[in-house]
Image (tube, rainbow, N blue to C red; front, side):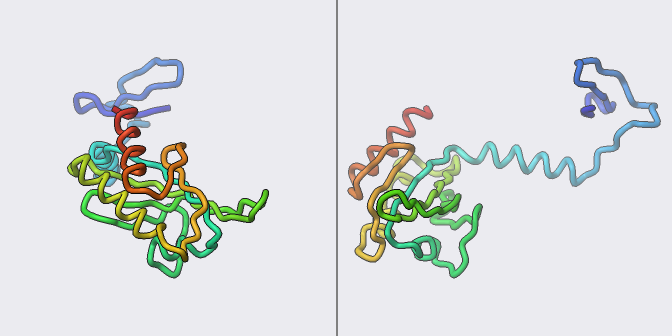
Length: 168
């Protein structure tokens, strides 16, 4: 059963699509302020997030996630704010033991609606190059939105720009 509010009255609906007025029913629902606040917060987040950009990093450095997030502990779902309106979220890591025992890290860049396209493309590119384009990172492959890309500024920007066009 699903309950919802219409014109100040509580309505209940069963999976078969029937609905009835529960205003005077013993089983009527009361909406708590925290339920309403949580719902408003959820929809506000949906409006603020304009895009998520998945990035997969293949590396020989099994400790790279600590360097990326500048933390001694990194766990699934952890976010680091890069700039106002841009953050990176750690999704997972796993060891890929088929040939070279490289470690795979999955990250997601979360972009808010108030940051301009050119700014967030530049910020993501700069962050990736700063963190990955050094000998200690030992990056063997970088994949942005399921497209393999070299650690090159113009190529990274191009892939992110194509992602924006696809999302449209």
